[in-house]
Amino acid sequence: MQVGRIGGIRIVFNPFFLILLILLGIAGHLPRGLVLFGIVFLHELAHTLVASAYGVQFSTIELFPFGGVASSEEFHDPDPFAEAIIALAGPLTNGVLCILAMAVAPYEVVPAQWLEYFLRANCVIGLFNLMPAFPLDGGRVLRAYLALKLGYRRATERAAFIGRVLAVVLGAAGAAGVYYGFASISLPILAFFIYLSAGREQRMAGYVFVRYLTRKQQELEEAGVLPAEQLVAYGDVPVKDIVRYFVPKRYHVVLMINAAGDVEGVATEMEVVTSFFEQGIDTPLEAVVGSPPDFS
Image 1: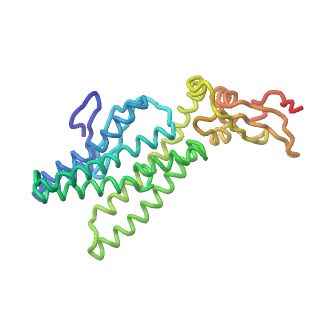
Image 2: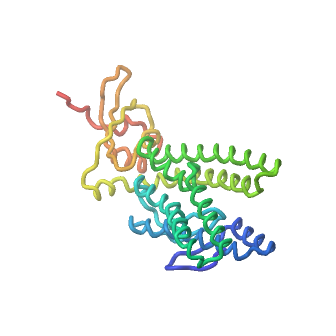
Image 3: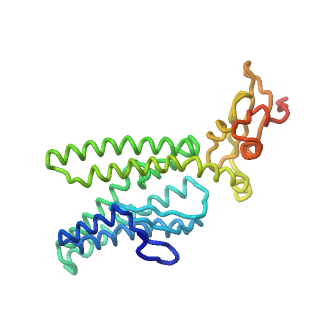
């Protein structure tokens, strides 16, 4: 449900967040819900402000009970470094708010119970989002790290799998906590949310990666120079399996070898990407390569 717009960015309440506010209102704790809304909003606003510094413009902020998701209608280059910095901006903001709360505590400008709630909420939201469970902020940092080693597509799949595993563990621990009375029902609900969100991100990974491939040539043009990355493959390997190993901020050269291990041809990154889109994703590498290289 859209609740407003700030600077062209739509502010949307996820149903879980809306339910939480309603429950807090019924319990007579609506002011606490509004404080929570403010904290989550500042968390997400930090993401958008840092993202804009990297040229990424978000169009929507969807708020959840323990964070949110900023999305864009335009595609942006999933630069691993930029993604990690943007992801860390949210928890860092919560940390700054905690420091500010502790700084004003001695002056008693805010009632102690409200200051305590504000401090606790920021700590919980900030630390919770640092969990390496995709799509939480910590999970996005993990994906950024893995992308440099595995490529964007495989890194997303790996991070989403880890996120789902952690969600199952968190859900089981939360269910046990509810049963034995030392945890609230919110914990397994949050675990369920993480599990579903990780699955959604994993399903979108292929679509986003294909759009990323369309910008590979632009990536080289913008950088001017990129480190080279060599890959080796047999001639019958389809290009769809090769592009999975393309990592951001690298220019790839694919060596085609025969059964004896001899190099029979070379395909550049752009030749593979062009074949991927124009000839089909099942095009074998041998239909793409140029002449064998002269290493003499």
